[in-house]
Image (cartoon, rainbow, N blue to C red; front, top):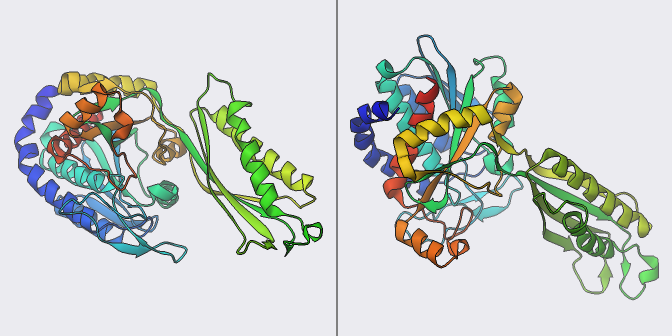
Length: 413
């Protein structure tokens, strides 16, 4: 594999400045989930210029490009495109000043503080290099730009549109920029990212004057008692040998101090690495919130999923195969990473198609910053993905991501 990447070095080095420009442009023009119209157009036009057979508007804004180049595996490469409803505070010269409107009609700043803009630039570079060097590989290359990762809708929306019109991949490959020394690549067989479930719980009470609580069924108390009791799901219902997180990020009720409201809204997020733990946590949330409602004399609460992500669980054999190629290309810049508590909808592609998938992480933190944080045992001080201060050290991160995805694709092509 190292020989193949060396043969591509000239093309890789030549395309990096272009990809940096693409990244900065996308960074300054972020688009919210399922609204990635400009980004999708840029990706689609690039694929067409490279000779791909391109299909657009899959799952609203998704793009798929295909090149058939003789016999061999069908390999799918995936990049996500959406940005976040938040302000950027990095003070970079190309920082986002964009605004947008959520699907609920709320106006908000918009910024690429997760790194999906770099994922798009990486994939555009990989697509162009592989299209120019078909003598180095054979098979079918499927390049996919996905919307809506941040809301857990994009992968499933694309799969619904792709079921009958596209070849079934033999392997699905994806990567994510992450805090870590720039230029490094972290892989992991098995679970690399957690399942993530966000729930919206509406407690239905009966409003009354604050001076007449006997006339009310107080939903604030239901939410308050539930908030405390829900913490026991991790501390008392989950084995200490299993990893689980439950965070209540929002409780909303009422408008005035002397009015007992009709309802209270509680929003929570859960993370876990095992499907059995995930299922038990969901069941426990429903049990606790329902019982607290009944204890107050109220009806069952309305419990709905805001979003849901399965565990990203890399295929063991495919990850072993890829890790050997990573080591040949990156040497000691490649390592087996610990699992991360972030979540992704990437694995839906492999799960729905029933094929192996591999997902890995590419470090983006400036080397001296990373080394200082490690020395001081303070890695948590580095602004991570979804922080308003999250920064990507473009050199060598842009090149590393291109090389990593090329290595992965050529492992099967």
